[in-house]
Length: 316
Image (cartoon, rainbow, N blue to C red; front, side):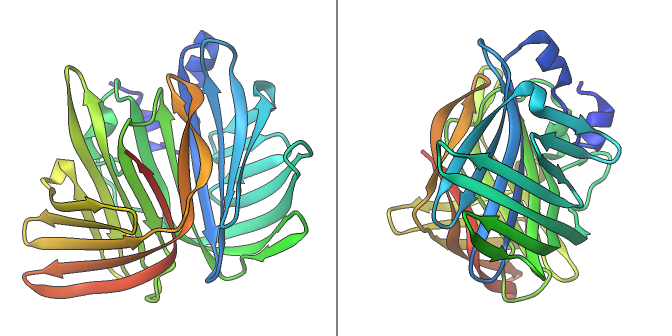
């Protein structure tokens, strides 16, 4: 069984032993910030493969993406309070202080963004995070945690002399760690709904589990006063799953609840994903897609809203 302290506090760095063993491993945090018109996401992390450990920061905007490598000695972390630093950039649940320059890619980013009014998912002993009981299994290929479903952001990001104003805007934080991303998956996240205090996250992936695979579901919708989880571990079923070159439709069922999703996706920007600890797989993420989420209980619509600036990855 995994270390209980790490399970309870999944934001903290989990991979110190892998650095010492030089064993295939990755760990990355995902910080997404957006105003009503545009967004920016940062993925600070480390990877360990058969060569040498490295640190990195990936950046995604509506227009482009960047991958900036660092020496592993440029990676530092604190557990209490949680904080990671790569080079001059600092990331925590309280905010971001970004300072990245890579002349070879023509990228210079600086800025400070503070987070407040953080809202997390509901947890308990059986379900310490969004993976539920699977959080306790030590051999999962990829682990996932939601660190903040929604927060209020205040600050500015200067990217190549263009200012992104994030005052009174919204943010989201999650992380992944393990050895490889799933071979097939869809992931999306949105918190730019017209209804305030709403946020949504979904991941459906083919999960290797011993001698067989299964299609795993984790999904969370928070509204002003409520939270709704749809997941493999609470007997959620996929009723419809359509992906084509124009849109995505996914319908889920849990008891007397139905969750209907329609996503119109914008063109994604290239990122690197881990395979056996090495950042060797190209994937594409959009942070400018549009999603409509409809929640039905007993044939009555209890939530229906649309969000722009939806983050979306599809790996088929």
